Length: 234
Image 1 (cartoon, rainbow, N blue to C red):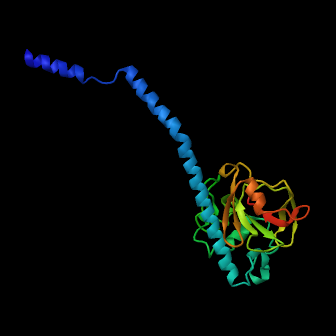
Image 2 (tube, one colour):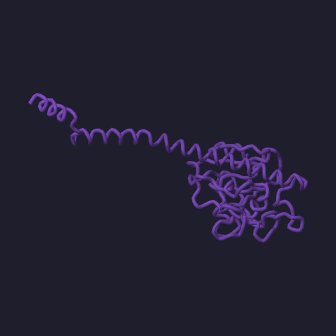
């Protein structure tokens, strides 16, 4: 009888959670999740922004390698006859110019921001299931705009995130048809990086900017900024 009494006491002491205790534990876990989620989401956003900036650095390096053997000219500054994309029938498309440096890039995934919508291409072929130059991908697999400026220099903008707002389209002697910006309409849209963005300069530097810093990096010259032409992927 003594042994049975001890067994009964042990069973009562090792009982499971009551419903009230279980609800309390679940509420505590939910509270922890609610507190931690903004920090985790912020880390993801910052991580994507860093990847995107590194992508642009690699894009810049690829363009510079391509230009090194061509009098320091970009593909869109070199005629089709001489192996470039200037006034190519598809020149208004950003993907065309990026595809021209495919030998200098490791992968078309470099042309795609992890915060963007869509799917990056896996190679530079015309394969409809994976190829960057196929219409299934092309601009849809491109997250960056490309620019040409009449005034060149180390701080000229070469490329940047596609959430850049443009005002109007005009004719261009390099891209055929391009966008131009007028003061003060240009800005970052909220579609990527929470309304901020990265820009690649001609010296290879990548700047992470909000709209105010963007307008410092692209200063006003005269009445507008019409000498800066750029092509957008979408």
